[in-house]
Amino acid sequence: MPDLMSLSFNNRYARLPEHFFSRVAPQPRQGTRLADVSPDCARLLGLGSLVAEMASSREDRESLRLLMAGERLLPGMDALAQKYTGHQFGHYNPQLGDGRGMLLGELQTENGSVFDLHLKGAGRTPYSRFGDGQAVVRSSVREYLASEYMAALGIPTSRALALAVNAEQVQRETLEPGATVLRVCESHLRFGHFEWLAHSGRHADLKTLIDHALREHFPECLPECSRQ
Image (cartoon, rainbow, N blue to C red):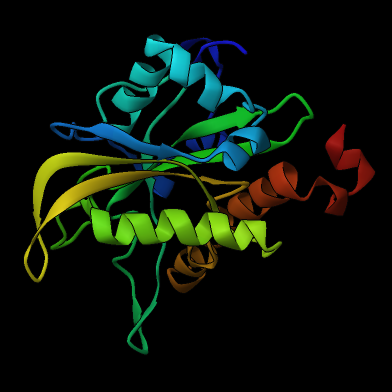
């Protein structure tokens, strides 16, 4: 298996109009250490030997730790926070977006599948509002275990490649230790992306996003002539 630093990433979402997102770098998290890596998710990405390699390769383990710590991106990654909207507590909220997560990039597997890598707990973004952009161990462990367990049951879900804990003290009801999760999904497009453009009357942008979704994720829905 090639080492992590030799993998080539892409980010097609970053080539959409720049008001669809904000480019922002992950904020370094002090004292980050890897807690676990999912072998099943690694295999999904075509990195089936990742866990074994990391056990023997200090360089691979350090590369992943630095990524989870927000200290170093992998080649080709282009970190950004996506803008979208949605409903909260029964009311439309136009201020939503990636408030503590960042889309890092896409990895194409040997069989042609493409997966987004998204770092949760990566820090504040323009959409954080009053949030701190951090994640805590309690909720991060829950997401890591629940997503992998649901996948094992055959339930379609986002996946989690890795979980890391850090030395940050995050204020919730009490002070809690911080964490990051490396989320994996075929796409991080949400209904709220389309809702934002529809509610704000940006019909040209809405068409751009729909065309992007069809082209990149549902090419079988496009007329043959538009794929040439």
